[in-house]
Length: 73
Image (cartoon, rainbow, N blue to C red; front, side, top):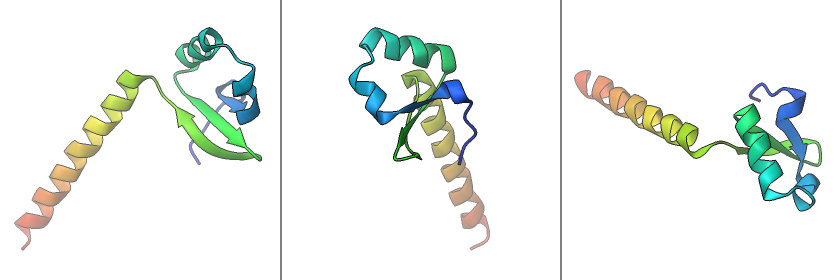
């Protein structure tokens, strides 16, 4: 499980009472939010720019892996 600080975690039930402004302020302050349901990490919220960076890097690594495999065929 990725490492989360206590302030980066919240119960799924808290989403019912949290305003949109509070949610985005908290996300902006932490950079990520882990959502707990029944004491298990079930979801992670990320700012969109961070998500795009992760997806871009993942694609780069996949392409590099495919190229590496192709070299040895």
